[in-house]
Image 1 (cartoon, rainbow, N blue to C red):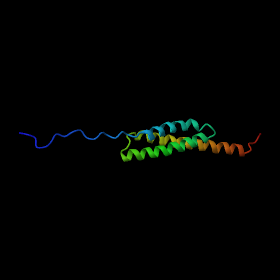
Image 2 (image 1 turned 180 degrees about the horizontal axis):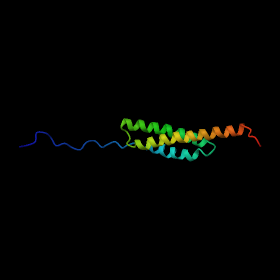
Image 3 (image 1 turned 90 degrees about the horizontal axis):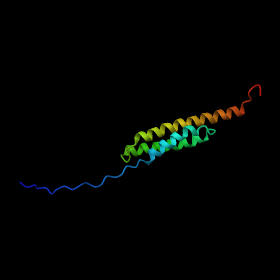
Image 4 (image 1 turned 30 degrees about the horizontal axis):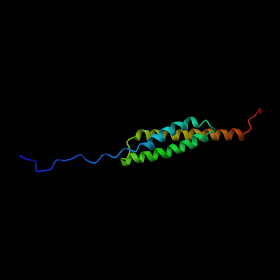
Length: 104
């Protein structure tokens, strides 16, 4: 018995995953936490960048264009922590420079 269908070839090559945003979000998010010690500004700037990149990375995962959702989520969370610490340190620095402590 012969096969009435022609032999099937290989499918088209798979599209490569675009995992850059999630990786950058994780790296910058981790750097934002110690960056908060630089008068808070480093943590706020790096944290905001990590939050944006983490959000965009999670969108790529939801669309099926990337497969590193955990890296994007980690960068997003670390960015929030770094920006929060930076903001807290900046507020404390401003308050301590404005408030006149007794005994000084």
